[in-house]
Image (tube, rainbow, N blue to C red; front, top):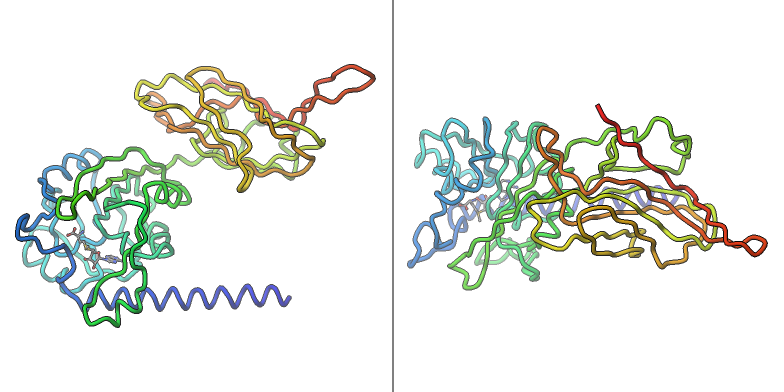
Length: 375
Ligand SMILES: C[S@@+](CC[C@H](N)C(=O)[O-])C[C@H]1O[C@@H](n2cnc3c(N)ncnc32)[C@H](O)[C@@H]1O
């Protein structure tokens, strides 16, 4: 009971802190007005990026817009001309910037936003040098609040492993009034977005000339198709109460990252996995497979397209194992299927070589095989 109350109290305190931090961010952007939307650059003028921002962003994003693009953190509309006025909606918390955008680009739509808003539906969402000014919990809340129809999310900003200033309160109190920066790497965004069922589809890197040596990463995320709940109707062991999984399709394909909880009934077993990596014409890097049990890496292997079969070196005790399986890179199945998958899973489970009366008997525990379902 006491633990429950403590947990509850911690949650309330955290929510209060989050709320206070969001208030500060909101006030700071509104009080600084147009001052910090982009760096002032005598050399580069309106586009300190140093390249044709409108043309290149149009080229990167436009092919994915079917009906509407929502730009979150549009500032005073600096980028809106990359898109058609009929398809575009820009939102920003900064009231002065929104007023300015409406004056500069009267043919485009702009809307003043709450710090975390209930965003109108769109098929593409774009945030350009915005999320790096938000603490992680806000980025989660923003993504959570996107409309159901959002198939593509483009996050573009400088992404590198660097600890920048994250102290919102002291920045708020500072006479210079500057904005906190929560720098994240592309890998951190991939993890964050996967929690909301978006996978990284492509990454484009452009220079940011104003900041010597800096680069803007465009991360293009796509919505994962929802995996069906049922894996295989026939298998008895599916009734095992310990078995839980995410990211497995009924027909045997798995997401590039999937998880499964299996019970191993014997001591001294090895983890086994068998599958098929399909032909991938876009393959530009090594294929790697990793299996982790919480923080521990159980298996890491490189493989080639085609059939694979691995066994971990680790001697596993009996128990319940929550396995996270990742394969990199994922593959797009040919249309009309077009699912983004990791590989075709044939078997995963625990195997043990236990000796009985002098003979080595191979026993397989909690293993499953998937049948190909052809329609
Ligand atoms: C560095 S500026 C970039 C503006 C614009 N994307 C551009 O490149 O010109 C960041 C913008 O994000 C906006 N912003 C910050 N937090 C926001 C939030 N939670 N929701 C919407 N906009 C936000 C700020 O008001 C500011 O206009």
